[in-house]
Image (cartoon, rainbow, N blue to C red; front, side):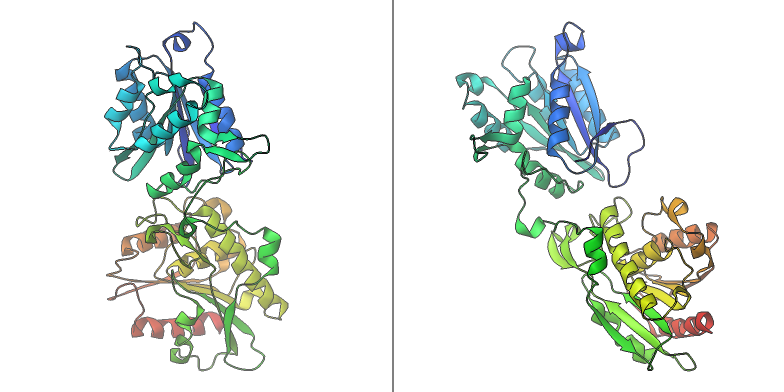
Length: 438
């Protein structure tokens, strides 16, 4: 279980941020100790297994201040989920629902309906509660905002539902639907502890449990191998793009000018399948999830690092078969290019080269700290289409400039093409291979 941190630091690209708001005149005025915020924080600590950061606020029952607080948490602090407690009854000072609806762009009445159903199991006055939920959408960001009861016991019952003595669910809690809702509005993928609250997602939106490092290393990715001569002394591990597989670049071997080069073993691995968020959760071969069309805004760091280990396992196999790291080239197109850089720049040994086709440097803000010293000696071949509509050339140019600023040996080419390959590029690949393998 991952514990939260409370911080005002800059938000990481894939960081889950949760806002907690307690609305109470007397607690905010110091008349008594607030119990709502600790109750929310304690429940989340037991329910979430995804790393997250919390932002807390304790404010009075003033509608203008409630609205301003919610706007600050969503628009400025960039929370993906905001939970409020207190101020949802029928008295004149209870204005939390009004403030919540005022800042929302979509109402989500089902949450409030279910909260009242749960509370009615205990008290008939649950019908007096006016809890609600909304989605607030702004440019490039959205959040789910929900009103919860004010009492710690009621907060727990509302979030996780009711169970019998054997742990069987009698009435579903509202939080089971929250992770998928956050998925749908573009937020981070949230995992829960099923012993507390099992998140529900359609099968098409579920991600498989990540394998352990030992599992990754013990089971190599399925792959296609082509050897240009017996007993090859060079290996090129070539990774495909999103939705393709290892067959994608097999025909290219016969098109490359490899005259004069030693025997090469081409390895074309198949990425594992996973739901891809930007494609509506459709399951396809992918090295990591693409959360939205703006690939630089929020990256699937966990997926990138998991696939990095799989590529490292392929490198280790080639070394075990007698090919040293200095004669191994990593190559890739689009997502495969991202994996080439993700792995190659962190590999502890100098590789023969990194062939980067129509892609970019992932986790660019971390590479300066994480790259290996040995990788500085690895030559990089980077190419891109001038009219690429999938990964704009501006993203590739920014990656090129970053690599150069870090001291890498880089050869750059751009071509009059879209997100694809062209004959001039194939010719340049052949020339570069002869250069780095001479």
